[in-house]
Structure formats: C-alpha cells, structure tokens
Image (cartoon, rainbow, N blue to C red; front, side):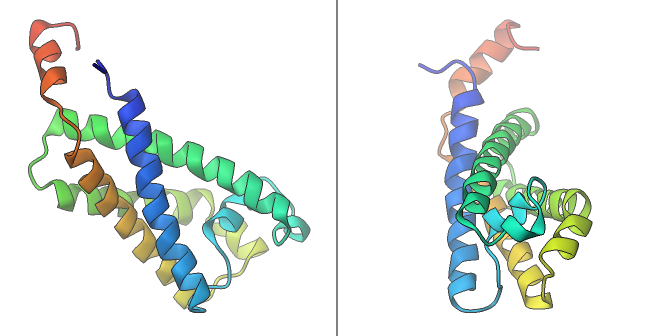
Length: 158
C-alpha cells in the first residue's frame, strides 16, 4: 500500500493534464486558439523561430508533464491538510490560481512576445485551467486518503 501521496499526486496531476490538453487541442482544432499549450510552455526554453517546429512540442511537453505532476502532488497534499469539503470549488480555484501564477506572471510577457495571443486564445487558457482544476479535484476524490490519516494520528507525519 502506498504510504504517501507523491506518486498518486503526480498521477492525478498528469491525468488532469490530459483533460486540460484535450480542451486545448479541441479549441485549437476549432480555431479558438492558434497554438497548443506545449508551444506556450516551450517559450520559456526556445527562441521564437523554433516554436512551430517539432522540438518545441517535445520540450514543451516534457516541461508541461513535469509541472502538472508537481501541481498534482501539491493539490493532493493541500486537500489532505485542509480537507475535501467543497473539493470541486477548491479544484477550480486551484486551477485558476495556477493560470494566474503561470500564465499571468511566469509566462505572460514571454508568450506575448514570442507567440502573440488573441483574446479567444487567452480565454482558452483560462477555461482549460478551470477544467484542469476540476479534473484535479475529481481525480483526487478517487484517492483513498484514510490510510494516510491513520499515520498522521500516530505522529509519524507532522
């Protein structure tokens, strides 16, 4: 039995990322946005001339999966410590905080400089992160947290 939530949290994050990417790619196919998330993520690592090449998808994909795995771990522990009451609302809030934190601060100027976004493209990122947070909540709700609570009561987790 798993005695911590690092691996389950990472899997929750990656599963939620698949849902987020599905929203993004569907919006891309419907012409609501002109780029996919892996290109956006790659803007932190590559020059503009490489962002429409296959290497951008590889580099952006690796960065995205690592980031969402870490976010899944953070969210699972957040729910463990603060409880699963209003889980879906917490998930949506977390997803939107991630959107503001990553797109609004870390990637904001870089993305606009290298991959200018239309208002509808920005709305796609907001909706996708809302869905990411919702998926985090749904997948986290599937984890059996009772065994970890037993360890916390014994004092082995502080």
